[in-house]
Length: 329
Ligand code: ADP
Ligand code: MG
Image 1 (cartoon, rainbow, N blue to C red):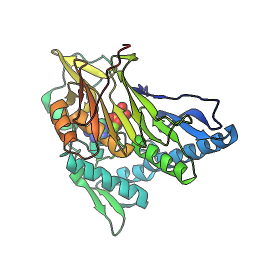
Image 2: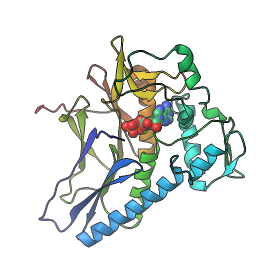
Image 3: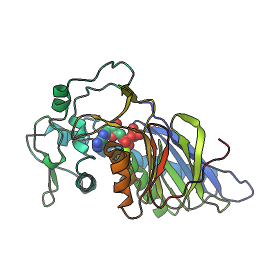
Image 4: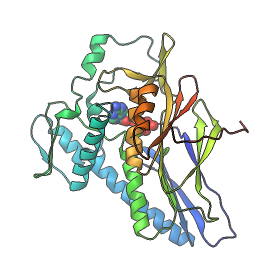
C-alpha cells in the first residue's frame, strides 16, 4: 500500500553532544515506520531500535486481519457463530475502540472492515454507485453488534459476515506501545513515526523540542508550518492521491460507516494529543464528520487539538492551536 507522509519528523544531528539520534526505516504493519532514538552509541541505538521493531511486530501479530492466525482473524471467522477468547491487550483495545465509536456516534467503527468495496479511488470510477448498492455495502457494519464479555474476556461479532479491522487505530497504538517500552528501558528521547502517525518523547540532543512539519497535502514539498512536539502524539490522516470528484464535489477514501458514502470536503486532518492511538482514531473520525462537525467535536475535547486542510486547501485549526504560517513558502 502506498503511504503518503504528511508529517515529516525533523531530525537534527549535533555531533558536539555525546548523545546522538539513531534512525531506522522499516516496513511493518504494511506501512513505513521511522524509528528514531537518542543514544550514547550506535550499538546502544541499534539495540533500542531492535526492541521497538520487536514490539511493533508483536502487536501486528495480534491485530492483523490479513494474518489468518491472528486473534483478530479468529474473531472474524467466528462472526455469527461464537464468542472468541482473546488476550487482555486485544480485549482492551477493542473496548477503547468501542468507546470512541460511542463518542463519535459511530463515525469511527472498527467493524467498517465488513464494508463492500464499491468505491474506487484510483481514478477508474466515472459515476457514483447506485444508492441501493451504497446502502447495502454497509449492511453488516455496526459497532453495537460487537459484543464484549469482560468476565470471559471474549469478543463476539453478532452477525455472520461481520469483520473488525484496526486500520484506523493500529498504527497509533503500535507507536504508543513502542514508545512506552523504550521509555521503560531508559531511552530518554525518540520518535516512533508510523507513516505520519507519530509519538515523540524527550528532546533532541541539543535540548530543543522535536519539530514536525505540517505540509500542504497538495504539494508535499511545501511546509505550512513547523510545530514543536513535547512528549505527545501527532497523527495525520488523509491522502490527496486517494479521492474522486463527482459533480465538482471532492470525496475522500475514508467512508462514513453509517451511510456508505465517502467523506467530503477534507484533504487532511492532523490531531495533537498525548496518545497516538486516540489521535489516530480521532483523525479518521473528523474526516468522516466533515470540517464543521469535526472541528466542533475536537473543540469540546480536553487536551486535543486539530488542524484540518479542507478541499480548497484552506487551513482550519481548533481553538487552542497557534499556527505560524511558513513565510518561506
Ligand atoms: P491513513 O490511510 O492515513 O492511515 P487513517 O488512519 O484514517 O488513514 O486510516 C484509514 C483506514 O482506516 C482505512 O484504510 C480503513 O482501513 C480504516 N477505516 C476507514 N474508515 C473507517 C472508519 N469510519 N472507522 C474505523 N476505521 C476506518
Ligand atoms: Mg486514523
